[in-house]
Length: 196
Image 1 (tube, helix red, strand yellow):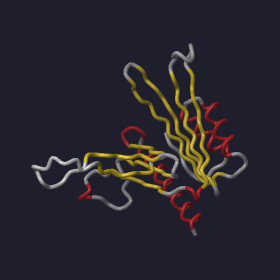
Image 2 (tube, rainbow, N blue to C red):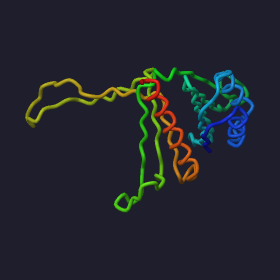
Image 3 (cartoon, helix red, strand yellow):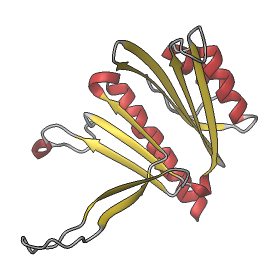
Image 4 (cartoon, rainbow, N blue to C red):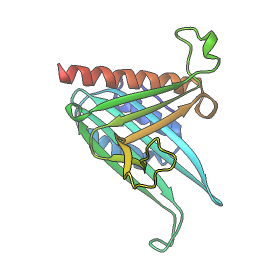
């Protein structure tokens, strides 16, 4: 489930409750990070994953204010060596808008030859970078000589990849895809305003 829009604390809390994922815990963490600053947009995304014989849920809450982008992520864990009972881990990060270096929105559309502007994508992936995490993809370098046995080292690329969130029509519903698009637009607009 995702929700976005100009909001109040009560609207955000209601969206977190609709996700059904430890709403008291998630709300407290997010509200603590936001503080007294008014929110301009938010996105709540609850996802269930299957890990071997376990079902795990996690929720990501993104909040946009006039000066900050706030990320909250909560994961549930089964009992393990560190805890005899199941537990949840919640983390929040507050990033100044002027630190956001990239907002990438990837869209997947069905039947692109008949695409009509305004049609919702089948899925979207929102990737946001602010320099906290860099991913490096390397592969062996080579040359065009098929008989060459020289070591040409490696070639690759470095990508800022602090947060990547996938929302699909099949898994989350068309409303959620539309809401993710609205949040991505609000975040992009906010970063433009910060750089002006």
